[in-house]
Image 1 (cartoon, rainbow, N blue to C red):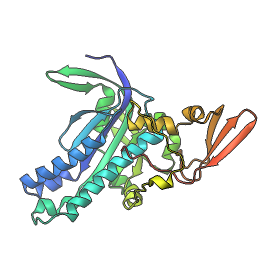
Image 2 (cartoon, one colour; image 1 turned 180 degrees about the vertical axis):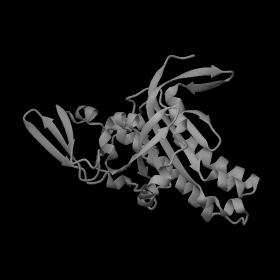
Image 3 (cartoon, rainbow, N blue to C red; image 1 turned 90 degrees about the vertical axis):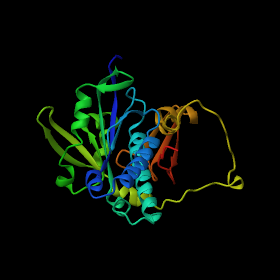
Image 4 (cartoon, rainbow, N blue to C red; image 1 turned 60 degrees about the vertical axis):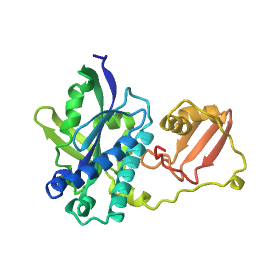
Length: 286
């Protein structure tokens, strides 16, 4: 048994799968689930660690708090949903089979639940299991009235404990839902509708700069995950080191996020240099 860990718990749950399975041919339904689970597994990258697969859901965790900035972790969740929707879309576009499983795949969707708490890892045979009250709560979240209460079908639900770590200002565009579980008590979650995220990013072009378009280029190899590098480059606590400033402040953020139109104010002694961000690429995990 390991010592207690304080970190994030994330569940990615494929919704509509029970109905899909009941109305579909088993072999093709299983192939569809396997393909979609592989997408979720591929999107679960360090510092997220997969704990286990639970039927049509993936449970993962971070081995400690303060590893990712709030915006980066939210964008990882958004990128996971976009990758899932792209996979569904490709299945529909490439489908030539007329069976029920292949015809009904577009009815599947994804829900994600993020909680922050304390848990431990216990060795059970050859497997490692997460346990603790916060693990129980995370599993309880899968059974909820969110869609009935809000009409939102695909979403990311963040507990108050998670938002306390991510930054409560990120909830400005989210919907509050109060849930009640008999064994764990009342739970408040903040729900982000993910369909607008998919709609906004579905046709986003990938911009590739040619050699002649770059004035100055630097290259360095780092023994760090893309998420960590992104955090260091975008977090103002570290940007001042990169820019040689005494400190850096980001103003005009949008709902707690640095975006187009935000301004980086670099303080160099008595001199202040302002840089308006004209274009901001969301973190995609790649």
